[in-house]
Length: 217
Length: 327
Image (cartoon, rainbow over all chains, first blue to last red; front, top):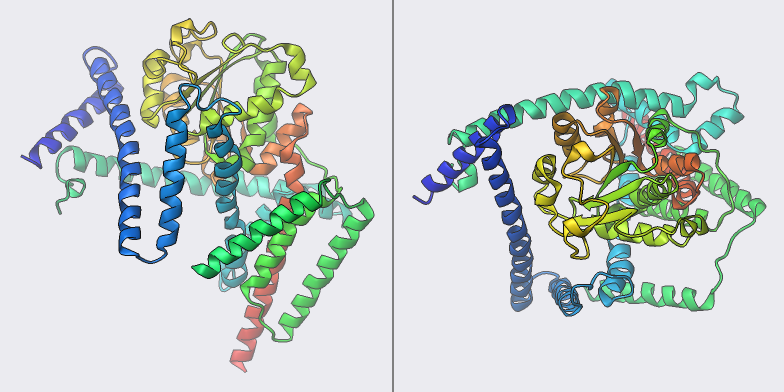
């Protein structure tokens, strides 16, 4: 029954969502609303589950003194700090000037932005070491990347203006053309492929053929 | 790990030192800025020549140059001419076509890591809406989205133009907050907004909010704008909000995500798009309120040029290495 009940729930919910798209009337509309609400409730519970799981893993790491366990202490302290400040702040804990707001604006935001900013360094380093014109395909990719990179910043058109290039081949124009036509065509192909994959996988899950999500084979 | 913490401590100490020792921001004059640019170009040329001569530079040099390219422009007084792209102009025109009093739904689906790109878009979009007397309804499919909206509104509220409008929460704008459920939230909103947002960000009941109490679903919304950094975001809004409920949608995306949504512009499912920091800068230009988007574009320009330069240097090293290998 541990496998059958989740399979039945999946099949019923899956079929209801499928049918209500084409017949958005009672009782399917009502069922759709119920199931959507359930999804939100499960999602909210999953946030808690994720947070508690993070704590469990971090405490385990500190207890066992695993690799880089010092960082786990930082996670635990930060987690407890923000939870305590959040819960003790009352209903208006997120208002401007509160301790929670201070932590959000001056600790969380800059640290998160810093992590994302590291991408620039890794992209630059990876481009330097791996972006080579090895063959025709790589060369085309390189040329496209060159125009998009230089065309997406004002300095590209400024340089083109200085060397008196015709306006039609200004980097911004070329980049826009690449993004709209070449990239657009490629993205559409990828989207259609993904959509077909989702349809087939969804049907397999709804019909109970695909059971990997239940822990089976 | 001890070494890591030592480095963090030194960086923190240096930051505090700079913060207290240099109280006023340093701005180089235009002439000094150009001299610095020429010096960087000369060093890059030197690296290229040395590479041609057979020396291979390690990645720390690349990191150093990217760091310089990003940080130095903050101290420079350089102006760039920002051209308006058709996608940005289309979004601006769509907002300008709305009559005063129209209701605009803004979904902020991002968190602080993407804020450097998306926050300037949020600020300039809100400012434009308020100046045009459009009623703004804010929500988020990401937990931090509504908080980012609060920060944006707090910032633009300091502007004299906005202060003169005497904006009132509940009448001119409402923050409905975050709701979990990803695309299911959009789907449920198609039937009833209230079913997903019983209260607003501050806990006020939906029916007590003057602006939204008569809004039942998307049919009462004149325009929607989505700021997205991934899933759930613009793609979900197009697939459910636009295709199923006929929402008129514009979007602002991170530079990483923007290429994925370009097909929706050509198909007409997206009215307009602000792509990355460049999109933010263009929107600031067209709205006439220059902010961080425009300021940060100088750093972005520098960084792009540096990356291109190192790609050229890397390829020079590769081809010379190939030739030597053949010999």
